[in-house]
Amino acid sequence: MPHITLLNGPNLNLLGQRQPELYGRDTLADVESAVRALLPGGWELTAEQSNHEGALVDAIQAARGKSDAIVINPGAYSHTSIAILDALNSFDGVVIEVHVSNIHRREEFRRHSHVSLRADGVIAGLGAEGYAAAVRRILQIVE
Figure 1 (cartoon, one colour):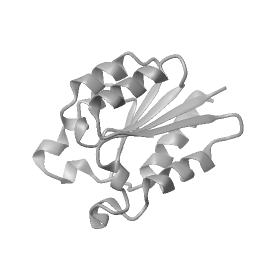
Figure 2 (spheres, rainbow, N blue to C red; figure 1 turned 120 degrees about the vertical axis):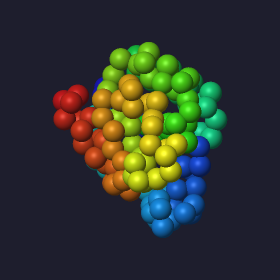
Figure 3 (tube, one colour; figure 1 turned 45 degrees about the horizontal axis):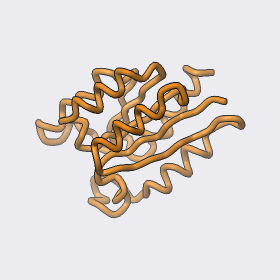
Figure 4 (cartoon, one colour; figure 1 turned 180 degrees about the vertical axis):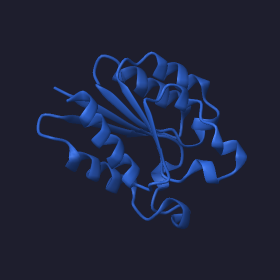
Protein backbone atom coordinates (compact mmCIF):
# COMPACT_ATOMS: atom_id res chain seq x y z
CA MET A 1 0.00 0.00 0.00
CA PRO A 2 1.53 3.38 -0.96
CA HIS A 3 2.60 5.47 2.00
CA ILE A 4 3.73 9.04 2.71
CA THR A 5 5.46 10.20 5.87
CA LEU A 6 4.80 13.84 6.78
CA LEU A 7 7.38 15.26 9.18
CA ASN A 8 7.42 18.66 10.84
CA GLY A 9 10.23 20.04 12.93
CA PRO A 10 10.55 22.48 15.80
CA ASN A 11 7.87 25.06 16.52
CA LEU A 12 5.59 23.81 13.76
CA ASN A 13 3.22 22.58 16.47
CA LEU A 14 2.53 26.33 16.89
CA LEU A 15 1.55 26.80 13.24
CA GLY A 16 -1.45 29.12 13.08
CA GLN A 17 -0.54 30.73 16.40
CA ARG A 18 3.11 31.76 16.07
CA GLN A 19 3.69 34.81 13.87
CA PRO A 20 0.56 34.34 11.73
CA GLU A 21 1.59 37.32 9.62
CA LEU A 22 4.60 35.24 8.50
CA TYR A 23 3.34 31.65 8.72
CA GLY A 24 -0.40 32.07 8.18
CA ARG A 25 -3.39 30.96 10.22
CA ASP A 26 -3.59 27.29 9.18
CA THR A 27 -2.75 24.94 12.02
CA LEU A 28 -0.74 21.75 11.75
CA ALA A 29 -4.02 19.84 12.14
CA ASP A 30 -5.38 21.81 9.14
CA VAL A 31 -2.30 20.84 7.12
CA GLU A 32 -2.64 17.16 8.00
CA SER A 33 -6.36 17.18 7.12
CA ALA A 34 -5.67 18.84 3.77
CA VAL A 35 -2.95 16.31 2.95
CA ARG A 36 -5.18 13.36 3.89
CA ALA A 37 -7.96 14.76 1.69
CA LEU A 38 -5.61 14.71 -1.32
CA LEU A 39 -4.64 11.08 -0.96
CA PRO A 40 -6.38 8.60 -3.25
CA GLY A 41 -7.96 5.51 -1.75
CA GLY A 42 -5.41 2.98 -0.62
CA TRP A 43 -2.77 5.56 0.30
CA GLU A 44 -1.63 5.83 3.90
CA LEU A 45 -0.17 8.78 5.79
CA THR A 46 1.95 8.92 8.90
CA ALA A 47 2.21 12.46 10.30
CA GLU A 48 4.61 13.44 13.07
CA GLN A 49 5.92 16.65 14.57
CA SER A 50 8.81 16.99 16.98
CA ASN A 51 10.84 19.76 18.49
CA HIS A 52 13.69 17.27 18.93
CA GLU A 53 16.24 16.52 16.24
CA GLY A 54 16.79 12.90 17.28
CA ALA A 55 13.06 12.17 17.16
CA LEU A 56 12.98 13.42 13.56
CA VAL A 57 15.98 11.22 12.70
CA ASP A 58 14.15 8.26 14.28
CA ALA A 59 11.01 9.02 12.23
CA ILE A 60 13.04 9.19 9.00
CA GLN A 61 14.68 5.87 9.80
CA ALA A 62 11.27 4.35 10.58
CA ALA A 63 10.07 5.45 7.12
CA ARG A 64 12.73 3.28 5.44
CA GLY A 65 11.09 0.29 3.83
CA LYS A 66 7.64 1.60 4.79
CA SER A 67 7.10 4.90 3.00
CA ASP A 68 7.32 5.77 -0.67
CA ALA A 69 7.94 9.42 0.14
CA ILE A 70 8.72 11.89 2.89
CA VAL A 71 7.37 15.42 3.01
CA ILE A 72 9.51 17.26 5.53
CA ASN A 73 9.44 20.74 6.96
CA PRO A 74 12.50 20.59 9.16
CA GLY A 75 11.97 24.13 10.47
CA ALA A 76 15.14 25.61 11.92
CA TYR A 77 16.89 22.25 11.60
CA SER A 78 17.03 22.91 7.85
CA HIS A 79 19.92 25.24 8.48
CA THR A 80 21.79 23.23 11.11
CA SER A 81 21.16 19.50 10.99
CA ILE A 82 23.62 17.24 9.29
CA ALA A 83 22.00 14.38 11.26
CA ILE A 84 18.67 14.90 9.47
CA LEU A 85 20.48 15.13 6.12
CA ASP A 86 22.33 11.88 6.86
CA ALA A 87 19.08 10.13 7.81
CA LEU A 88 17.38 11.36 4.63
CA ASN A 89 20.36 10.11 2.60
CA SER A 90 19.57 6.61 3.89
CA PHE A 91 15.96 6.84 2.62
CA ASP A 92 15.35 5.47 -0.89
CA GLY A 93 12.02 7.17 -1.67
CA VAL A 94 11.03 10.64 -2.80
CA VAL A 95 11.83 13.55 -0.46
CA ILE A 96 10.10 16.91 -0.77
CA GLU A 97 11.21 19.72 1.51
CA VAL A 98 8.57 22.29 2.45
CA HIS A 99 8.88 25.71 4.06
CA VAL A 100 5.77 27.74 4.84
CA SER A 101 7.64 31.04 4.49
CA ASN A 102 10.00 32.01 1.71
CA ILE A 103 13.33 31.26 3.36
CA HIS A 104 15.14 33.13 0.58
CA ARG A 105 13.57 36.43 1.63
CA ARG A 106 14.48 36.01 5.27
CA GLU A 107 17.66 36.31 7.31
CA GLU A 108 20.85 35.21 5.59
CA PHE A 109 21.31 32.18 7.86
CA ARG A 110 17.90 30.82 6.77
CA ARG A 111 18.77 30.87 3.07
CA HIS A 112 20.81 27.67 3.18
CA SER A 113 19.23 24.30 3.87
CA HIS A 114 21.27 21.17 4.41
CA VAL A 115 18.10 19.14 3.75
CA SER A 116 17.91 20.54 0.21
CA LEU A 117 21.02 18.53 -0.66
CA ARG A 118 18.85 15.38 -0.48
CA ALA A 119 15.46 16.75 -1.47
CA ASP A 120 13.98 15.85 -4.84
CA GLY A 121 12.03 19.10 -4.68
CA VAL A 122 11.88 22.18 -2.47
CA ILE A 123 8.77 24.28 -1.95
CA ALA A 124 9.07 27.57 -0.08
CA GLY A 125 6.79 30.53 0.45
CA LEU A 126 3.43 29.00 -0.50
CA GLY A 127 2.15 28.90 3.06
CA ALA A 128 0.32 25.75 4.10
CA GLU A 129 -0.48 25.14 0.41
CA GLY A 130 3.14 24.07 0.03
CA TYR A 131 2.33 20.77 1.73
CA ALA A 132 -0.48 20.07 -0.74
CA ALA A 133 1.81 20.94 -3.64
CA ALA A 134 4.38 18.48 -2.29
CA VAL A 135 1.81 15.69 -2.04
CA ARG A 136 0.47 16.36 -5.53
CA ARG A 137 4.02 16.07 -6.87
CA ILE A 138 4.61 12.82 -4.97
CA LEU A 139 1.42 11.36 -6.42
CA GLN A 140 2.67 12.21 -9.93
CA ILE A 141 6.05 10.59 -9.29
CA VAL A 142 4.92 7.46 -7.45
CA GLU A 143 1.85 6.65 -9.55
